[in-house]
Length: 469
Image 1 (cartoon, rainbow, N blue to C red):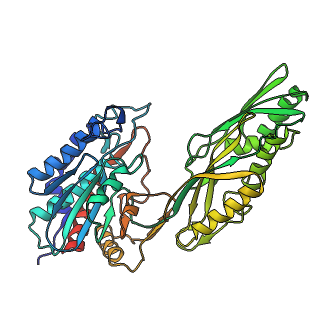
Image 2 (image 1 turned 135 degrees about the vertical axis):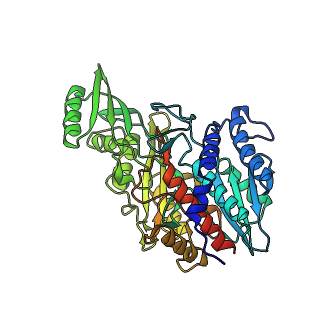
Image 3 (image 1 turned 135 degrees about the horizontal axis):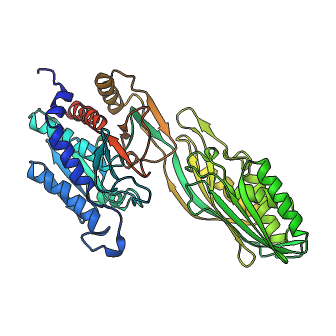
């Protein structure tokens, strides 16, 4: 067979592909359960985007299926084996501060600017056109190719759960929803709470009325506040707090009012996959309070935080530190901290663990420490790690394609985050973000370069053919 110039095939269809991408991005496919229906559980916008893609695919000769508004798929080819391309059409809310309409899909300086342009509607359209090119070239395939279209990736992945209750698992596949070259390993992710059982509010120079910091397990808290009452010299405490802030290059303030003082501290937010990239406001404020004579219940709570989490994002003090050569260190992010004198304290933790780590053993150690210090481990949830062997045919094929299309080495990457690829038994994340490009997903003025969209489409087209031929 004559060698196919995949980039040339994409370029022939570029104008229509860009127009279709813009039309797709103009649909505000943000989760809206309040107005959901039995056939559109996540709201009108997401349902409209799902129908847009399914109707387009059906009109262009793909086999289309809608699974109750939770997910859908487009399929071509025949054979027992199934190649999956896992995409999603839901997007996060637009937020503020955009320089243009976040759902206008305007093109400026070679960039398509819109919410979802990078995550994941732009790449979804690239994958769709890749399938379309293979189909229109009438290339012989020995396997089926199926684009699986998710609708709830940005929230709870209910789309995937529903889909695989009713449909088969692909033999192998990829998710165009991350970085190039190839993400072949993802850490496991466990969320849980440690809840204080003690109710020993007793005498101390200071009563900790309340302490709060953070709202999400997977984010480093950037603000913390504590309210205390007591007989101590509160103004002196405020002065000490200012020195503490200065020493640690932090912003904040202390406010005195008779026998009450409020401390507010600003940290630096970061994704929970690497807590050391941020400054955890809750942990800093706990460090400051640890030096004072608090009531017994508060003292136990603050001491627990200080002993096991301050300055230690790797679980060394907890006795659960672990690393492997595939995905690196186990990490722990203290994403939520709360305390009241009436109810005691609580910590919300996000633990990301390497693919070879024994999470059941880790959990047992954590439960033993909780029991020893008057805490209880609750609200535990776990998403297992994901790893495809570097010698798997999927990896070998995608490496060959990427290197042929770009002339660059297709290195294998492991991450602490989670992508849609972990929904597949043999799946990897594969683009669309090229090395060196800024990751603007979920940010204002999110964009994808037109040239990168074209290049990614050529890579996906060849990859689909090579995997399914």
